Length: 251
Image 1 (spheres, one colour):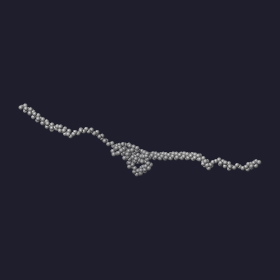
Image 2: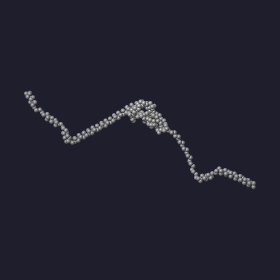
Image 3: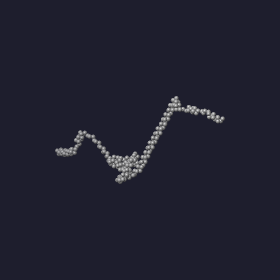
Image 4: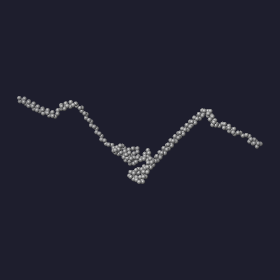
């Protein structure tokens, strides 16, 4: 009986799995169902669109901010890198300035001849390619920003402070001053101008007299000849008077 019971159990029909699966699929929503529900409820669809738009805008702003920060960072790094390179170049060139000073002295004494002169010229060209520039020549206008005056004098024939001698050339790298030039400065001579004497005060002019008054004064004023003639005339007249008086007494 045991075998027969087992056989009967095996002969019983098993439940259909497809039906159970169909029931499970009925509970899940498909794309069509979602679209149909959205079309049925228009307000929910509009809200979903608004949420998506705000999310996209927020992510776009975040992306723009991050992009701008990265651009600024890259520019700052490039600027710092270029500045570091300029500082390193300036340090190397500044260490070579004493060598250039010795070459300038040798050139002034006429010792840069032959291969030595060729090497000095090549060295100067190589440093110039890196931006090294020398300045400071006789006749330049004195500029305290780039010149260092070690001598000062007055000299005629100059319009203003002028470099009349250069003891040591100056150098700069682009806009960066590596070393000022040592120069002697001359200024226009101050001519000694004597102080002008104060003009003497003019005497007040006498009022001009009329011609008639001058003529009358000249006629009224006796001259020396008139005075002599009057004195001679009075003397004979006095003698005649005395004689007359004497004759009267005799009579």
